[in-house]
Length: 341
Length: 259
Image (cartoon, rainbow over all chains, first blue to last red; front, side, top):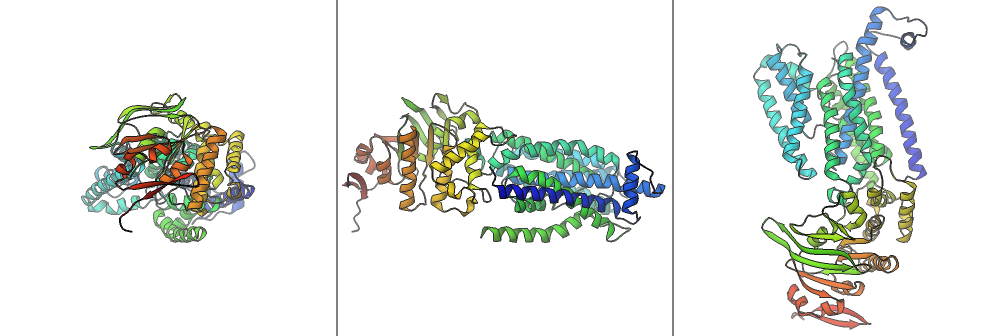
């Protein structure tokens, strides 16, 4: 039920989103300490498709395919998932401040990762078990939240999330304090990074992200109905409890998979859906798919900044997303307020 | 013929009994208004009739459907509900808001069908709100907003519409406008309306029947003429009331000792 001007605006934003995504991908693989020209990169990609010969040397080819490409793909997956999960939570809880960590995913994953680093590792490196324990911690946290508040209203679920998050964060702090030598490593993990990206981590994350994004986007129509609250949605014929269970499970599972691979990256899940909402209106049918597109673009660009501004060292990705995200969020809020007055 | 049957319905919240063993029948194609003082249980009763609240005891049948055992979709195809304070999501277009009334008829994966579009357009025209169909719901006046909420209920294509204080916060012109729209739906489309109202005069002017509720129980039930003149009315409100006839209509006036 869209007017033609709304439809053309959505098409324009979608087209610009794809152009921006392509640009971010080009920058993401091309920019770094080891210089590679666009022509050489395109030639190397073409050679992998059986067209011509690569002009990259073996070091450049290794950097391209074993470091930058998996990092780019993992960034795309993480950005898309966090943005879609944030938008989904904002819809299902009718709370503009909801982010993917609302129900305890971050606290649970943080506890799991801290246990892995402090109890299993030597404190100096991040053990291979870290993503699995982070994943398990995130899922246990959301399950606890659901067990406590899932049978009540959306508000009771959010409150349960706050309580479980506080509890697990306290436990994480306690575990972290028990080993001073691990504190730096734990903080590095908590601030998030795509630095450890590999094809293994891509394949570990991909199925969850694809399935969970499909479920969230398919539920967009139900989220539009839920914008009038639980009671009215139910009176309109929506099975509110079932929809909430499915979308919360999908958004939480996808977020848990992402967090276990890249750590805690803040702001993507809040800022991107709000930015998209400002561009295309309030329907989740448009917000969620475009959030995936713009979230992926945003994270790849911020990761490029994180790994190049103090090269050869790296800034934590969560710091960059917050540094860029916070002022943008303030500007967005001002723009939204002005559009409503 | 009864469109709605309420059988021995009680609603308890904690130790409080909000509705006590109420049994009522609501004839099809008529306007039934539930009146009563604050705290009488009016909102609880209509929420229970609309199926958005479970009764502690008793049952409600709407158009032959047991409303509390039916699934959400069937319930929404049977009875539409307009709450006292509807949530109006800023940023949504009026047309899309009215389209929410089609939720029970469409697949949420596919979006609205051509038939959904036709019904929404028809309701927008019938309620004379087509002119602001593409406006943001947050920009509407109180009167426009109430028409839009009623349009959403009518888009549900049910034979029974339940409304809780639909004219709250409206000026007298917009109150009468909205009630006239509803009256037209009753007379031209055979709609069954069950509404709560605080204004006894307007309730008497527009309804076919008044049900007086106090302390969760039915105290009087009948034509507006009879209920307004019943001894239970003044007793339930705890204030002396006088009914005067002006231009053929009953007007309820409180009798106070201050002047």
